[in-house]
View 1 (cartoon, rainbow, N blue to C red):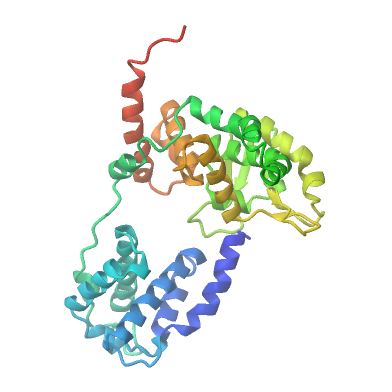
View 2 (cartoon, rainbow, N blue to C red; view 1 turned 180 degrees about the horizontal axis):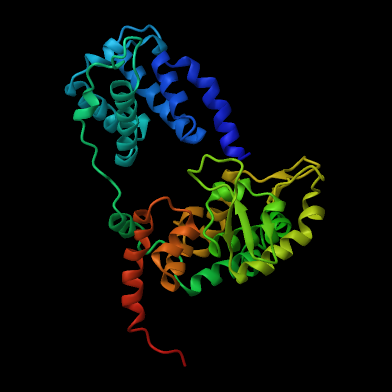
Length: 360
């Protein structure tokens, strides 16, 4: 089973009983269609909203599980606007416009279910009045806007190979005076090069990398088998191709994986870490992968790079050579609208390429 989903399912099962009965009913209704990760986000959103209702005296409580349906029915648009303002202005909430829209969408899904789908024993809707039906939620991240934010923050053409080569060859010289950094680099160079090379030659997400096992890799066919985001079927892994350029890096890492990380036979994870004081290697965490990329990116002179921007870098390069449909399939996007980001990004790339001087 997808390790992240398994962990989120445990957290979902732990937190759901603290919700009102009608939210438990909604979560169970959605469970066959949505991943545990998505439903856990719903529960977190409902926790924040119900806690706010109690703090504002709009529900009696005393706990969030005691908030009544009747109290939801009595909410006015002024209350929803006040909650939106609360999310925008409270510094500790750290909510972007995208996050606020997502939280309101979570509420709208719940209220729609309670007013249009769920019924009481007399076949009447559980919620007689749906204030969220009046709430307009604007799309905050159009593909063109997202492309504009990414412009200048991705690796372009030659930089993809240069970054991989930098990790594999040049970084060591830059930290030669730092014995601790040099020691860590010598131990993990093959692994780190392999991870970055794989992202830049396949477009994998960090969660997909984290979940990968050795058995998920088919070097002969240059295929990876990964749990795709948004798919709630843990019996099926999606095949994803990677470019020839990543093959040598993967082979080099695999030849050292067992000896370098003292991997026990029971450890199936593809990418391992061996923390100080540990005798056996274990699955490299998502945070460790993200921090590793940032470490090299800063030294490379591109501190804005992240795992996701490496994915974007691959996607832009891939789209220049293929069509929208193939790019959507390769990246595992549910909607072609998401993939249109790269159409906007490549407009500028192609405009610059037309006037680029020929190489000598």
